[in-house]
Length: 501
Ligand code: AHR
Image 1 (cartoon, rainbow, N blue to C red):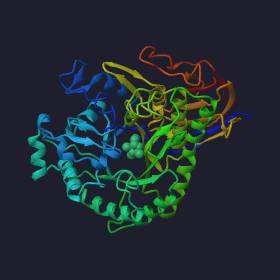
Image 2 (image 1 turned 135 degrees about the horizontal axis):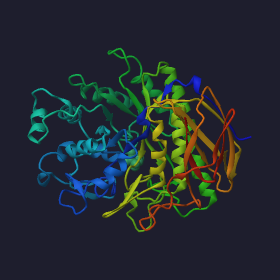
Image 3 (image 1 turned 90 degrees about the vertical axis):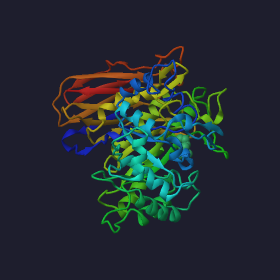
Image 4 (image 1 turned 180 degrees about the vertical axis):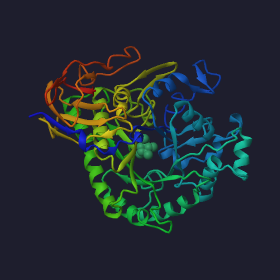
C-alpha cells in the first residue's frame, strides 16, 4: 500500500538552489530586532547586523533573499535609506501597523547582510507609488560602474564598486497592496518599468514580474500574453513570474487570519496541511498556462511568497504577524519542497515568508535571545537537495482524512547530489500512525543508508525560549536497505531525511 518507486537513471532536472530562498520585509520585527540591532547594541553584531541570526542562517545555506517587501516595497522610496543614518528621513509604515520606519536599514545595509549570509540579493522595486525614474536610478545606483550621478552618490556613501545585483522584482502584489491594478494595466507598466531598470556592463538583470494571487489564472494568462512572449529583444520581457500563495485557515476582510499557530485541534491540523498541498494544483495549472505561451520554459515560475499565516501571537501587535511555528509547519514546509522539486523544470526560485519573527519564520528572537523553529530544521535537512538532480518519484500512500480534508499521509522527494549520493526526504502527516513504506530504488548501487528525523510528540510541538530544543533533528534508525531498495518506518508527525551511498 505505502510504496515509493524512484529511478535514478532517469534523473535529469536540476533543483535550483534558489528554491530554498527567503523573503524578509520591513514588517514587524523582521528587519529591526530580527537582523538590525545597530552598531551600539549589546547584542553581538557586525556593522549593526546581529551575528547570532547570521550564523544560524548560514547553516541552512540561504541562496537568495528578497527585500524590502512585500507590501512595503510599493511604499518604499530607496533614497530615504542611504547616506548617514542620523540624516535619513523617517516614514510611516502604513501597511504594517503605522509604525515609524527610521530607514536605518537601507540599500547598503541590505547588501551587507547578503554578503554576511553569502546569499544573492533580490530587490523588489516600487511600482505602486514610485516612478520609473526612481526605479531606474535605484538599479543604476546598485549596478553601474561608470561615471554617473548615481555612481557618484553610491561612492560618496562609502561603496566604491557596484554590487552586481542579479534579481530584481518589478513591483509586488500589484493586483492588491501594490496598486490594485488589473493585469492588463500592470502588464503594460511592467514593460515600461522593466525597460528602464537597465542592464549595466556584463551584469544582466533578471527581471521578475508580479504574478498571480493563488488561483487567479487570468492574471497569468494576461501576463504571459503581454509580457511573456517574444518581444523586440527576441525573448520574453520577463525572466520570472512570481506567484503568491499562503496557507491559512481563513482570511478576514481586513486581511488578518484566523487560527492559532500552536493552539489547535485535529481539524485545523488537517486543514492546514491539506490547504498547503493545494500548492501543487496552483503550480501545475499556472504552469500549464505558461507552457501554452512559453513551451521552452524561458520564463521561470517564482513563488516569492509562501508559507503558513495564522493569527498573530496573543499579546503581540496584530499587524506585526509574529507567530509560533510547530511540527505542523515543518510538514507544510517539507511538502512544499516536494512539490517545488517535482516542478523544478519551471519553478526555479521560491521565497518563504518570512525569515525572522514574521509568519512561517526560521528564527524567532526576543531581545538578545534567539531560537530556531521546526521549519528551520526542515530547511537544513532538505539543504542537500540544493542544486542536486531531481529523481522522479512515484508515491503511493494511504490516505489521512479528518473532517473535510483527506490527502496522502506520506509525501516524498529524492535527488542525487554532485558526489553521486542519493537523498530521499519523506514526511508522514498522520498524527496517529507510524507508517511503514517500501521504497523501490532503481538504477542505484549504494548500500549504506543513514538518516535523521524531525518528529513532534504532539501536533503542536514547538520550540520556545525556555525549551529551545524540544523539536530538533535526531538520528534515525528506522530505515533498512533491502535487495530492491529500502524499508522505512516513518514516525507519526515526522520529517525524515535519508542519505544512501
Ligand atoms: O508577507 C506578508 C505580506 O503578504 C506581504 O507584504 C504581501 O506581499 C503579502 O500579501
